[in-house]
Image (cartoon, rainbow over all chains, first blue to last red; front, side, top):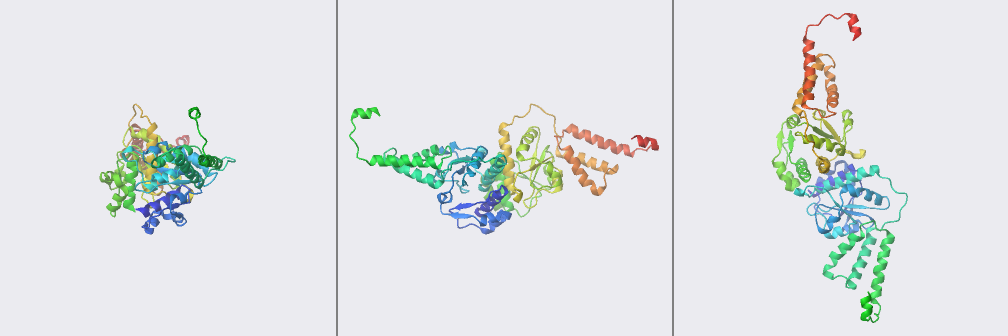
Length: 239
Length: 239
């Protein structure tokens, strides 16, 4: 079924005008026979795929990273439908590489994978059986992009957006700093960092935005390393 | 792949709130193993399927019969996109049984199958590779129905629509009559009847409409059987 899904993903991509496939942590038991049977005329997409060890590596040069989920987890409530999301994704695509990310068939994207995403997409479906087949989820998102592209006019110019690599360095610095200043305990760090990721992913984060945020983290960290002056209790109250 | 497709169709149906599956002329080499692997939690849809010898039998009680095509054949140009089509299908569904019909993976619906359809749907896709995987086409149409249903309010009342069985009897009578009166030659009858089918399928044909059309065909046929009166050449010119 894995090879069949991979092949069906290629076909859905080509049907809707997409071509660049990257597979993170590819399984070794992928049946080429199934890929060929299900991809049919879109086999070239499979043959020119990139294989990456991790999702972080696959999306490192991407500005927007949109992840899909049919689940109702805590952070998943900030998600949009494919139709709501498509125009903003096209806008970002006119300014730099973007990625649309799907999890494995059996359990979808992990929380660690979702952390790398700037956008969350939730495909409308019945609560009775909300989980879509992987290749069908791909088709549906690609279809909404294909339709939205018909009406879309790219903007004249724009400031460069932060890519995933820069964002991850920024979040890494913030994590260190927030632990250092005792803002969060290490066992709650993942949870808190997820909240920070959502806050900073609401709009499109530009490179300048990311560098400002990194500057704040760096300065905070530096400042806390300085010898402290004595604080009188009246000073403390004034804060 | 056939069994996998059947299973994936069941899953797409359940994801989007559909449940009644009919398979016309089912293949004998359907792998139950593949159906189960691809249908997962939607196996009940497969288990409660109807199997019919022909498409005509499968849709005989249906008012609207919507057929899908990614092709650009002559009569296929009157097709609508799933998004344009969905509201009218929901409206008909509130008044009687309706069917959404998909052809086999390899070559889609035949002209004979398309003749049974009142509505034609064409899924937007790139000309580079327009042909969608069967189960993905199902998902896409079902998804558009699912979204449209959210906004749809059924009308208070309505006149009953003609079902497929009644329509086919009507077209059968017209075919006979048009051949009898020499309107068309028998080798061009299929082509002409397809045109008539498209003309009479543009709006929703009610039972009363169908009976009127049958009445006209019957009367025409009866009239031509009557002894002819002599026609002078001046009478003929006046026609």
